[in-house]
Length: 210
Ligand SMILES: Nc1nc2c(c(=O)[nH]1)N[C@H]1C(S)=C(S)[C@@H](COP(=O)(O)O)O[C@H]1N2
Ligand SMILES: [Mo]
Image (cartoon, rainbow, N blue to C red; front, side, top):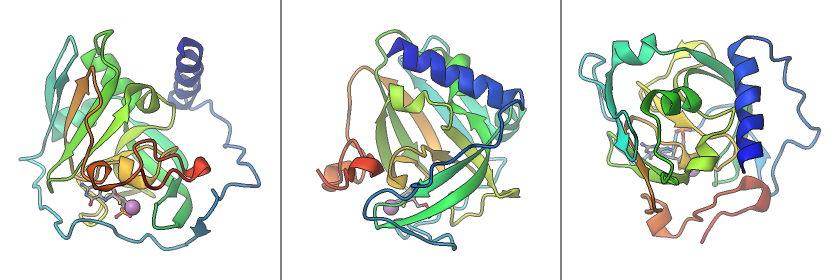
């Protein structure tokens, strides 16, 4: 696990330095049971909260040495990260080459300094949504809190001001309208996870439902 972490952090560092070559993507990018779309469907709970940027806050706390609450300017002042990844929704659509910009999860972790016993992360959103992930899954080179997509600020329907992107999991594992990130020493289930969705959510193994 330590080796996987170091390898991921190395890949991330080379992306941050702008040294990453264009990603060589496999021929077989479509996970089983998925179909490629070229639009960007919207999936939400029917609530699209309106959060003025001067009221927006991201609280990051729990088992960390340095809990913080970021305002919008604080968030934009953190090192910025751009990455391109594929997006897989459990309702069987996938979209390739999504260009995200925001703050890498590695940067968030370096800022708050998770304690050794932190093993899971719980995400809460402004629309009442929540989701959970193992810390290891968050510490990958393609995980970020995005404020822009394809060069434009995230629209409200797609989770603006900011949303979590976790490309290696089904998209419900990435919270739109992100409000709070809690580091924990146990796993608690989020909105869809308590409603029968898989907790692992790996598109390549079709972990759709628990
Ligand atoms: N806050 C919040 N985040 C959310 C959701 C939601 O309803 N509320 N839906 C999830 C689901 S099921 C998917 S597929 C993606 C959809 O993102 P999109 O609407 O930008 O396509 O967001 C995920 N994150
Ligand atoms: Mo979804």
